[in-house]
Image 1 (cartoon, rainbow, N blue to C red):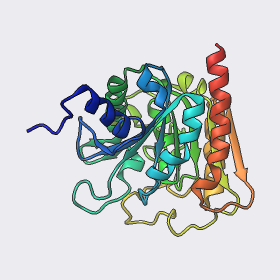
Image 2: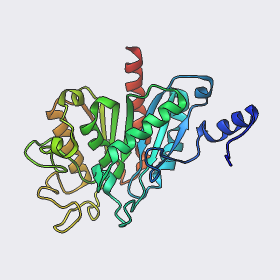
Image 3: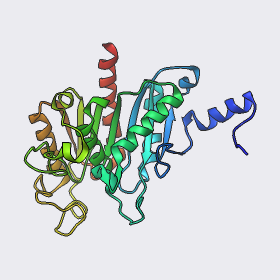
Length: 285
């Protein structure tokens, strides 16, 4: 028996409750192991066309709701829907928590999982989201900058917050430290020109200095030569990432936030300001 509402009034009420504003949590149709929730501006229910921001959680996975709710007001008044994916810990049954940060885990390609989610919600809400913005902090910052390297043509902005480890645009080192084997590994050729056109913001707190979680050691799951070469702390590593992007022609807005440690919520205002500026320029065109 279907649990779908069976009258026009019930359908409208269910849509208002579960599909608009702060939505329910949905399983991805392409791969139900992965979930997502959204903030959808109410105007979408009346046929409005809006932009999309993807906000990616960190290692704890709890921030997906904080990001949905934290960007809701911005989304309502700037006509932007917010999509928050959920990439669970231990999706392969092994308890591993960081696979999504590096884009690949076993037979899972997390970039493709995310693109399938975007395609699904775009069809559901009758939107053109072939290009969208992305923000991530900590583990989400891992995901965001690597997604931008792989798929710059799909983004209209990338906001990269405090990643613990970074992939530099180094053609002499393999993934994840560099991009030498990008095509062999992912079937994607690095598009430097597309990345150079992408508005990029990078953020880190100047007090975000703990290293216990970000120092790679031999024998670790993601250990490889050069794993720690970008710097010891998160501020050092994001500065190295910014320099690498700028060398490739990307205009990076780097923000080292005074007095802030590893606190995702204390950078959201700066992210909103950056995205509002990009939106104004994009819409003026």
